[in-house]
Length: 459
Image (cartoon, rainbow, N blue to C red; front, side):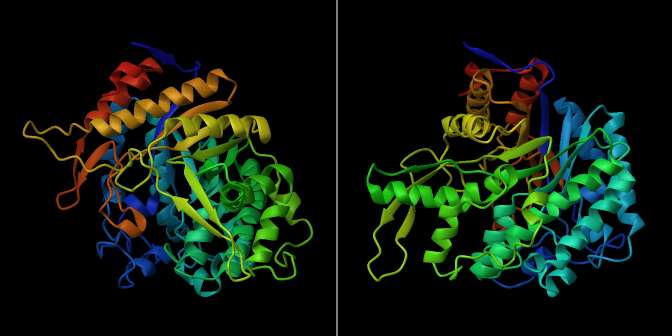
Protein backbone atom coordinates (compact mmCIF):
# COMPACT_ATOMS: atom_id res chain seq x y z
CA UNK A 1 0.00 0.00 0.00
CA UNK A 2 1.42 3.38 -1.05
CA UNK A 3 -0.15 6.74 -0.22
CA UNK A 4 0.59 9.73 -2.43
CA UNK A 5 -0.20 13.01 -0.65
CA UNK A 6 -0.93 16.37 -2.24
CA UNK A 7 0.22 19.81 -1.03
CA UNK A 8 -1.72 21.62 1.67
CA UNK A 9 -4.41 23.79 0.08
CA UNK A 10 -4.59 21.64 -3.07
CA UNK A 11 -7.89 22.43 -4.81
CA UNK A 12 -10.15 19.48 -5.59
CA UNK A 13 -13.12 19.85 -7.91
CA UNK A 14 -15.23 18.56 -10.76
CA UNK A 15 -16.09 20.18 -14.07
CA UNK A 16 -19.02 20.60 -16.47
CA UNK A 17 -19.97 22.90 -19.34
CA UNK A 18 -23.17 24.83 -19.94
CA UNK A 19 -24.26 23.36 -23.26
CA UNK A 20 -23.58 19.80 -22.17
CA UNK A 21 -25.76 19.87 -19.03
CA UNK A 22 -28.07 22.89 -18.80
CA UNK A 23 -30.85 22.16 -21.26
CA UNK A 24 -33.57 24.87 -21.23
CA UNK A 25 -32.37 25.74 -24.71
CA UNK A 26 -35.08 28.33 -25.39
CA UNK A 27 -35.99 29.46 -21.87
CA UNK A 28 -35.30 32.64 -19.89
CA UNK A 29 -34.22 34.56 -22.97
CA UNK A 30 -31.62 32.17 -24.35
CA UNK A 31 -31.28 32.01 -28.15
CA UNK A 32 -29.55 29.40 -30.35
CA UNK A 33 -25.84 28.71 -30.32
CA UNK A 34 -23.76 27.10 -33.05
CA UNK A 35 -24.20 23.76 -31.28
CA UNK A 36 -27.99 24.04 -31.40
CA UNK A 37 -27.76 24.54 -35.16
CA UNK A 38 -25.16 21.78 -35.55
CA UNK A 39 -27.23 19.27 -33.57
CA UNK A 40 -30.28 20.09 -35.70
CA UNK A 41 -28.32 19.19 -38.85
CA UNK A 42 -28.98 15.57 -39.88
CA UNK A 43 -25.97 13.28 -39.55
CA UNK A 44 -23.88 15.52 -37.31
CA UNK A 45 -24.62 13.84 -33.96
CA UNK A 46 -23.86 10.13 -33.63
CA UNK A 47 -27.19 9.16 -32.04
CA UNK A 48 -29.26 11.90 -33.66
CA UNK A 49 -29.81 13.60 -30.30
CA UNK A 50 -29.60 17.23 -29.17
CA UNK A 51 -29.07 19.15 -25.95
CA UNK A 52 -32.49 20.75 -25.62
CA UNK A 53 -32.88 19.03 -22.24
CA UNK A 54 -29.46 17.43 -21.63
CA UNK A 55 -29.19 16.98 -17.82
CA UNK A 56 -31.82 19.68 -17.15
CA UNK A 57 -29.28 21.36 -14.89
CA UNK A 58 -30.93 24.74 -15.47
CA UNK A 59 -33.84 23.48 -13.36
CA UNK A 60 -32.07 20.86 -11.25
CA UNK A 61 -28.94 22.75 -10.26
CA UNK A 62 -29.82 22.61 -6.56
CA UNK A 63 -29.85 18.80 -6.74
CA UNK A 64 -26.48 18.87 -8.48
CA UNK A 65 -25.12 21.24 -5.85
CA UNK A 66 -26.13 18.68 -3.22
CA UNK A 67 -24.03 16.10 -5.08
CA UNK A 68 -21.07 18.47 -5.05
CA UNK A 69 -21.46 18.98 -1.31
CA UNK A 70 -21.58 15.23 -0.78
CA UNK A 71 -18.36 14.79 -2.77
CA UNK A 72 -16.67 17.28 -0.45
CA UNK A 73 -14.98 19.18 -3.28
CA UNK A 74 -13.67 22.67 -2.73
CA UNK A 75 -14.32 23.96 -6.26
CA UNK A 76 -16.67 23.55 -9.18
CA UNK A 77 -15.69 24.47 -12.72
CA UNK A 78 -18.67 25.41 -14.90
CA UNK A 79 -19.16 27.57 -17.96
CA UNK A 80 -21.44 30.50 -18.62
CA UNK A 81 -23.59 30.20 -21.75
CA UNK A 82 -22.91 33.20 -23.96
CA UNK A 83 -26.38 32.85 -25.62
CA UNK A 84 -28.02 33.26 -22.19
CA UNK A 85 -26.20 36.51 -21.50
CA UNK A 86 -26.04 38.10 -24.95
CA UNK A 87 -28.71 36.19 -26.91
CA UNK A 88 -27.79 37.94 -30.17
CA UNK A 89 -24.07 37.70 -29.47
CA UNK A 90 -23.72 41.42 -28.90
CA UNK A 91 -26.01 44.25 -27.92
CA UNK A 92 -28.70 43.90 -25.26
CA UNK A 93 -27.91 41.91 -22.13
CA UNK A 94 -30.36 39.31 -20.86
CA UNK A 95 -30.62 39.84 -17.11
CA UNK A 96 -32.53 36.59 -16.62
CA UNK A 97 -29.49 34.71 -17.85
CA UNK A 98 -27.21 36.56 -15.46
CA UNK A 99 -29.65 35.88 -12.63
CA UNK A 100 -29.22 32.12 -13.11
CA UNK A 101 -25.44 32.25 -12.67
CA UNK A 102 -25.77 34.80 -9.88
CA UNK A 103 -27.88 32.33 -7.89
CA UNK A 104 -25.52 29.47 -8.68
CA UNK A 105 -22.44 31.40 -7.54
CA UNK A 106 -24.10 32.47 -4.30
CA UNK A 107 -25.22 28.92 -3.55
CA UNK A 108 -21.75 27.53 -4.25
CA UNK A 109 -20.14 30.05 -1.93
CA UNK A 110 -22.70 29.29 0.79
CA UNK A 111 -21.64 25.63 0.46
CA UNK A 112 -17.94 26.63 0.69
CA UNK A 113 -17.33 25.57 -2.91
CA UNK A 114 -15.28 27.98 -5.01
CA UNK A 115 -16.85 28.84 -8.39
CA UNK A 116 -14.30 28.34 -11.18
CA UNK A 117 -15.95 30.13 -14.13
CA UNK A 118 -15.23 29.44 -17.79
CA UNK A 119 -16.51 32.18 -20.08
CA UNK A 120 -16.44 30.22 -23.33
CA UNK A 121 -16.95 26.48 -23.71
CA UNK A 122 -17.84 26.39 -27.42
CA UNK A 123 -21.43 27.75 -27.46
CA UNK A 124 -21.00 30.75 -29.75
CA UNK A 125 -24.29 32.57 -30.41
CA UNK A 126 -25.46 31.50 -33.86
CA UNK A 127 -25.98 35.07 -35.02
CA UNK A 128 -22.27 35.75 -34.59
CA UNK A 129 -21.42 32.67 -36.64
CA UNK A 130 -23.72 33.97 -39.34
CA UNK A 131 -21.44 37.03 -39.44
CA UNK A 132 -18.28 34.92 -39.77
CA UNK A 133 -17.86 33.42 -36.30
CA UNK A 134 -14.38 33.12 -34.84
CA UNK A 135 -12.89 33.57 -38.30
CA UNK A 136 -14.14 37.19 -38.18
CA UNK A 137 -12.12 39.68 -36.15
CA UNK A 138 -15.32 41.38 -35.01
CA UNK A 139 -16.07 38.36 -32.81
CA UNK A 140 -13.12 39.36 -30.63
CA UNK A 141 -14.86 42.62 -29.72
CA UNK A 142 -18.14 40.79 -29.11
CA UNK A 143 -16.44 38.35 -26.73
CA UNK A 144 -14.72 41.10 -24.75
CA UNK A 145 -18.06 42.92 -24.36
CA UNK A 146 -19.76 39.71 -23.21
CA UNK A 147 -16.96 39.00 -20.72
CA UNK A 148 -17.24 42.55 -19.40
CA UNK A 149 -20.93 42.06 -18.60
CA UNK A 150 -20.36 38.74 -16.81
CA UNK A 151 -17.40 40.08 -14.82
CA UNK A 152 -19.33 43.17 -13.75
CA UNK A 153 -22.09 40.94 -12.35
CA UNK A 154 -20.06 38.12 -10.79
CA UNK A 155 -16.61 39.61 -10.33
CA UNK A 156 -17.15 40.60 -6.70
CA UNK A 157 -17.47 36.90 -5.75
CA UNK A 158 -15.74 34.78 -8.40
CA UNK A 159 -12.03 34.39 -7.71
CA UNK A 160 -11.06 32.06 -10.57
CA UNK A 161 -11.72 32.84 -14.25
CA UNK A 162 -11.04 30.91 -17.46
CA UNK A 163 -11.40 32.82 -20.71
CA UNK A 164 -11.58 29.90 -23.18
CA UNK A 165 -11.75 26.14 -23.09
CA UNK A 166 -9.58 24.33 -25.63
CA UNK A 167 -8.87 26.74 -28.50
CA UNK A 168 -7.56 23.82 -30.58
CA UNK A 169 -11.00 22.21 -30.54
CA UNK A 170 -12.71 25.50 -31.33
CA UNK A 171 -10.51 26.14 -34.37
CA UNK A 172 -9.49 22.73 -35.68
CA UNK A 173 -12.54 20.59 -34.95
CA UNK A 174 -14.95 23.43 -35.67
CA UNK A 175 -13.41 25.22 -38.65
CA UNK A 176 -10.91 22.81 -40.24
CA UNK A 177 -12.13 19.25 -39.74
CA UNK A 178 -15.86 19.94 -39.43
CA UNK A 179 -16.43 17.43 -36.62
CA UNK A 180 -17.66 20.12 -34.21
CA UNK A 181 -19.87 23.15 -34.64
CA UNK A 182 -20.00 25.17 -36.80
CA UNK A 183 -18.86 22.32 -39.05
CA UNK A 184 -16.56 24.06 -41.56
CA UNK A 185 -13.70 22.40 -43.43
CA UNK A 186 -11.47 25.32 -44.26
CA UNK A 187 -7.87 25.27 -42.92
CA UNK A 188 -7.28 28.97 -43.57
CA UNK A 189 -10.48 29.93 -41.78
CA UNK A 190 -9.36 27.70 -38.90
CA UNK A 191 -6.05 29.55 -38.57
CA UNK A 192 -7.89 32.87 -38.37
CA UNK A 193 -10.29 31.40 -35.80
CA UNK A 194 -7.43 30.15 -33.62
CA UNK A 195 -5.78 33.56 -33.66
CA UNK A 196 -8.96 35.43 -32.85
CA UNK A 197 -9.73 33.11 -29.93
CA UNK A 198 -6.25 33.73 -28.51
CA UNK A 199 -6.54 37.46 -29.14
CA UNK A 200 -9.91 37.65 -27.39
CA UNK A 201 -8.32 35.84 -24.44
CA UNK A 202 -5.50 38.37 -24.20
CA UNK A 203 -7.82 41.35 -24.48
CA UNK A 204 -10.19 39.92 -21.86
CA UNK A 205 -7.60 39.30 -19.13
CA UNK A 206 -7.35 42.99 -18.07
CA UNK A 207 -11.15 43.31 -18.18
CA UNK A 208 -11.51 40.46 -15.71
CA UNK A 209 -8.82 41.87 -13.46
CA UNK A 210 -10.52 45.25 -13.47
CA UNK A 211 -13.94 43.94 -12.43
CA UNK A 212 -12.64 41.10 -10.25
CA UNK A 213 -9.58 42.47 -8.45
CA UNK A 214 -7.42 39.89 -6.74
CA UNK A 215 -8.85 37.00 -8.76
CA UNK A 216 -6.86 34.44 -10.72
CA UNK A 217 -7.23 34.48 -14.51
CA UNK A 218 -6.13 31.87 -17.04
CA UNK A 219 -6.95 29.88 -20.15
CA UNK A 220 -7.49 26.14 -20.65
CA UNK A 221 -5.63 24.17 -23.31
CA UNK A 222 -6.14 20.53 -24.25
CA UNK A 223 -2.58 19.24 -24.59
CA UNK A 224 -1.50 15.93 -26.06
CA UNK A 225 2.01 14.59 -25.44
CA UNK A 226 3.31 13.15 -28.71
CA UNK A 227 5.91 10.48 -29.42
CA UNK A 228 7.19 8.71 -32.55
CA UNK A 229 6.09 5.17 -33.35
CA UNK A 230 9.72 4.33 -34.12
CA UNK A 231 13.05 6.14 -34.13
CA UNK A 232 12.88 6.70 -37.89
CA UNK A 233 13.39 10.23 -39.21
CA UNK A 234 9.91 10.18 -40.74
CA UNK A 235 8.23 9.28 -37.43
CA UNK A 236 10.27 11.85 -35.52
CA UNK A 237 9.29 14.56 -37.99
CA UNK A 238 5.63 13.53 -37.80
CA UNK A 239 5.84 13.91 -34.03
CA UNK A 240 7.40 17.37 -34.38
CA UNK A 241 4.64 18.32 -36.81
CA UNK A 242 1.88 17.10 -34.49
CA UNK A 243 3.37 18.89 -31.49
CA UNK A 244 3.55 22.13 -33.44
CA UNK A 245 0.04 21.80 -34.83
CA UNK A 246 -1.61 20.69 -31.58
CA UNK A 247 0.40 22.01 -28.64
CA UNK A 248 2.95 24.68 -29.57
CA UNK A 249 0.57 26.63 -31.85
CA UNK A 250 -1.16 27.71 -28.63
CA UNK A 251 1.57 27.50 -25.99
CA UNK A 252 4.10 29.56 -27.93
CA UNK A 253 1.95 32.67 -28.50
CA UNK A 254 0.78 32.58 -24.88
CA UNK A 255 4.23 32.16 -23.32
CA UNK A 256 6.80 33.10 -25.98
CA UNK A 257 5.06 35.83 -27.96
CA UNK A 258 4.82 34.21 -31.38
CA UNK A 259 3.72 31.26 -33.45
CA UNK A 260 6.32 28.48 -33.92
CA UNK A 261 8.29 29.00 -37.13
CA UNK A 262 8.45 25.30 -38.01
CA UNK A 263 4.68 24.99 -37.66
CA UNK A 264 4.24 28.00 -39.97
CA UNK A 265 6.54 26.27 -42.48
CA UNK A 266 4.40 23.15 -42.21
CA UNK A 267 1.31 25.18 -43.10
CA UNK A 268 3.15 26.68 -46.06
CA UNK A 269 4.02 23.18 -47.26
CA UNK A 270 0.38 22.17 -46.92
CA UNK A 271 -0.68 25.17 -49.02
CA UNK A 272 -2.54 26.92 -46.20
CA UNK A 273 -0.17 29.90 -46.02
CA UNK A 274 1.33 30.08 -49.51
CA UNK A 275 3.45 33.19 -48.89
CA UNK A 276 4.47 32.25 -45.34
CA UNK A 277 2.67 35.24 -43.86
CA UNK A 278 -0.04 35.34 -41.18
CA UNK A 279 -2.31 38.03 -42.65
CA UNK A 280 -4.71 37.90 -39.69
CA UNK A 281 -2.02 38.99 -37.19
CA UNK A 282 -2.18 42.76 -36.69
CA UNK A 283 0.28 45.01 -34.85
CA UNK A 284 -0.10 44.57 -31.11
CA UNK A 285 -1.91 41.23 -31.36
CA UNK A 286 0.94 39.03 -30.14
CA UNK A 287 1.67 41.34 -27.22
CA UNK A 288 -1.98 41.17 -26.21
CA UNK A 289 -2.04 37.38 -26.46
CA UNK A 290 1.06 37.18 -24.26
CA UNK A 291 -0.58 39.19 -21.47
CA UNK A 292 0.60 37.44 -18.28
CA UNK A 293 -1.93 35.15 -16.63
CA UNK A 294 -2.07 33.55 -13.20
CA UNK A 295 -2.44 29.95 -14.31
CA UNK A 296 -2.74 27.55 -17.20
CA UNK A 297 -5.59 25.07 -17.19
CA UNK A 298 -4.56 21.72 -18.64
CA UNK A 299 -7.05 19.21 -20.02
CA UNK A 300 -5.35 15.85 -20.41
CA UNK A 301 -6.89 12.58 -21.57
CA UNK A 302 -4.44 10.63 -23.72
CA UNK A 303 -1.10 10.77 -25.58
CA UNK A 304 -0.52 10.47 -29.34
CA UNK A 305 1.80 8.13 -31.25
CA UNK A 306 2.85 9.34 -34.69
CA UNK A 307 4.06 7.65 -37.84
CA UNK A 308 5.28 9.51 -40.89
CA UNK A 309 5.39 8.54 -44.56
CA UNK A 310 7.43 10.41 -47.19
CA UNK A 311 5.57 12.47 -49.75
CA UNK A 312 5.06 10.61 -53.01
CA UNK A 313 3.38 13.28 -55.14
CA UNK A 314 5.43 16.36 -54.35
CA UNK A 315 3.08 17.40 -51.58
CA UNK A 316 3.38 17.26 -47.81
CA UNK A 317 4.42 14.02 -46.07
CA UNK A 318 1.65 11.91 -44.54
CA UNK A 319 1.37 11.95 -40.76
CA UNK A 320 -0.66 9.15 -39.22
CA UNK A 321 -1.74 8.83 -35.61
CA UNK A 322 -1.20 5.22 -34.56
CA UNK A 323 -3.67 3.43 -32.30
CA UNK A 324 -1.70 1.91 -29.44
CA UNK A 325 -2.04 -1.73 -28.46
CA UNK A 326 -2.98 -0.69 -24.93
CA UNK A 327 -6.03 -0.25 -22.69
CA UNK A 328 -8.41 2.31 -24.14
CA UNK A 329 -11.55 4.10 -22.98
CA UNK A 330 -14.89 4.01 -24.77
CA UNK A 331 -13.65 7.02 -26.73
CA UNK A 332 -10.85 4.86 -28.12
CA UNK A 333 -8.25 6.90 -26.24
CA UNK A 334 -5.20 5.18 -24.79
CA UNK A 335 -4.99 5.11 -21.00
CA UNK A 336 -1.49 6.22 -20.03
CA UNK A 337 -1.06 8.19 -16.78
CA UNK A 338 2.70 8.53 -17.25
CA UNK A 339 2.09 10.85 -20.22
CA UNK A 340 0.40 13.34 -17.86
CA UNK A 341 3.54 13.28 -15.70
CA UNK A 342 5.71 13.94 -18.76
CA UNK A 343 3.47 16.76 -19.99
CA UNK A 344 3.46 18.61 -16.66
CA UNK A 345 7.23 18.50 -16.31
CA UNK A 346 7.60 19.80 -19.87
CA UNK A 347 5.33 22.77 -19.15
CA UNK A 348 7.33 23.52 -16.01
CA UNK A 349 10.75 23.30 -17.67
CA UNK A 350 10.13 24.64 -21.18
CA UNK A 351 7.44 27.26 -20.59
CA UNK A 352 7.93 28.21 -16.91
CA UNK A 353 4.17 28.17 -16.36
CA UNK A 354 3.69 29.75 -12.89
CA UNK A 355 0.69 27.69 -11.84
CA UNK A 356 -1.24 24.80 -13.37
CA UNK A 357 -4.68 23.41 -12.70
CA UNK A 358 -5.71 20.09 -14.18
CA UNK A 359 -9.04 21.45 -15.38
CA UNK A 360 -10.20 18.23 -17.05
CA UNK A 361 -9.14 14.61 -16.71
CA UNK A 362 -11.47 11.65 -16.96
CA UNK A 363 -12.69 8.73 -19.01
CA UNK A 364 -15.78 7.41 -20.77
CA UNK A 365 -16.98 3.98 -19.67
CA UNK A 366 -20.56 2.74 -19.71
CA UNK A 367 -20.78 0.40 -16.73
CA UNK A 368 -24.29 -0.93 -16.03
CA UNK A 369 -26.26 -0.49 -12.85
CA UNK A 370 -25.87 -3.75 -10.95
CA UNK A 371 -28.48 -5.93 -9.27
CA UNK A 372 -27.64 -4.16 -6.01
CA UNK A 373 -28.54 -0.78 -7.54
CA UNK A 374 -24.89 0.29 -7.55
CA UNK A 375 -22.55 1.09 -10.43
CA UNK A 376 -19.20 -0.60 -9.91
CA UNK A 377 -17.05 1.30 -12.39
CA UNK A 378 -13.68 -0.32 -11.68
CA UNK A 379 -12.08 0.98 -14.88
CA UNK A 380 -12.93 4.60 -14.03
CA UNK A 381 -11.52 4.13 -10.53
CA UNK A 382 -8.31 2.71 -12.01
CA UNK A 383 -8.08 5.64 -14.46
CA UNK A 384 -8.66 8.17 -11.69
CA UNK A 385 -6.21 6.76 -9.18
CA UNK A 386 -3.56 6.03 -11.79
CA UNK A 387 -3.59 9.61 -13.07
CA UNK A 388 -3.57 11.06 -9.58
CA UNK A 389 -0.52 8.97 -8.67
CA UNK A 390 1.23 10.31 -11.79
CA UNK A 391 0.13 13.84 -10.86
CA UNK A 392 1.48 13.50 -7.32
CA UNK A 393 4.85 12.34 -8.64
CA UNK A 394 5.03 15.28 -11.06
CA UNK A 395 4.31 17.72 -8.22
CA UNK A 396 7.09 16.14 -6.17
CA UNK A 397 9.48 16.91 -9.05
CA UNK A 398 8.46 20.57 -9.17
CA UNK A 399 5.42 20.76 -11.43
CA UNK A 400 3.42 23.73 -10.02
CA UNK A 401 0.01 22.04 -10.01
CA UNK A 402 -2.45 23.66 -7.58
CA UNK A 403 -5.64 21.69 -8.22
CA UNK A 404 -7.45 18.89 -10.04
CA UNK A 405 -10.93 18.88 -11.61
CA UNK A 406 -12.37 15.54 -12.62
CA UNK A 407 -14.30 15.44 -15.89
CA UNK A 408 -17.12 15.17 -15.41
CA UNK A 409 -19.50 15.58 -12.51
CA UNK A 410 -22.39 14.19 -14.59
CA UNK A 411 -22.88 12.12 -17.69
CA UNK A 412 -23.84 14.64 -20.35
CA UNK A 413 -24.29 15.54 -24.01
CA UNK A 414 -20.87 14.57 -25.36
CA UNK A 415 -20.82 16.85 -28.40
CA UNK A 416 -20.75 14.89 -31.67
CA UNK A 417 -21.19 11.63 -29.78
CA UNK A 418 -24.51 12.74 -28.31
CA UNK A 419 -25.41 10.63 -25.29
CA UNK A 420 -23.41 7.56 -26.32
CA UNK A 421 -20.38 8.31 -24.12
CA UNK A 422 -20.53 8.56 -20.31
CA UNK A 423 -17.81 10.47 -18.43
CA UNK A 424 -19.61 11.21 -15.16
CA UNK A 425 -18.79 10.34 -11.61
CA UNK A 426 -22.59 10.39 -11.49
CA UNK A 427 -24.76 8.37 -13.86
CA UNK A 428 -27.69 10.22 -15.43
CA UNK A 429 -30.81 8.42 -16.66
CA UNK A 430 -31.78 10.84 -19.42
CA UNK A 431 -35.38 9.63 -19.52
CA UNK A 432 -36.05 10.28 -15.83
CA UNK A 433 -33.13 12.62 -14.95
CA UNK A 434 -32.33 10.32 -12.02
CA UNK A 435 -28.79 10.87 -10.73
CA UNK A 436 -26.92 7.80 -9.39
CA UNK A 437 -23.38 8.28 -8.05
CA UNK A 438 -21.00 5.61 -9.28
CA UNK A 439 -18.50 3.80 -7.05
CA UNK A 440 -15.86 6.18 -8.42
CA UNK A 441 -17.69 9.08 -6.75
CA UNK A 442 -17.16 7.40 -3.38
CA UNK A 443 -13.48 6.83 -4.15
CA UNK A 444 -13.08 10.44 -5.22
CA UNK A 445 -14.75 11.62 -2.00
CA UNK A 446 -12.20 9.62 -0.01
CA UNK A 447 -9.31 11.13 -1.99
CA UNK A 448 -10.65 14.67 -1.54
CA UNK A 449 -11.12 14.17 2.20
CA UNK A 450 -7.63 12.71 2.68
CA UNK A 451 -5.96 15.07 0.20
CA UNK A 452 -4.10 11.98 -0.91
CA UNK A 453 -4.53 9.00 -3.23
CA UNK A 454 -3.95 5.47 -2.07
CA UNK A 455 -2.72 3.40 -5.00
CA UNK A 456 -4.22 0.29 -3.44
CA UNK A 457 -7.70 1.64 -4.27
CA UNK A 458 -6.98 0.99 -7.93
CA UNK A 459 -8.52 -2.37 -8.94
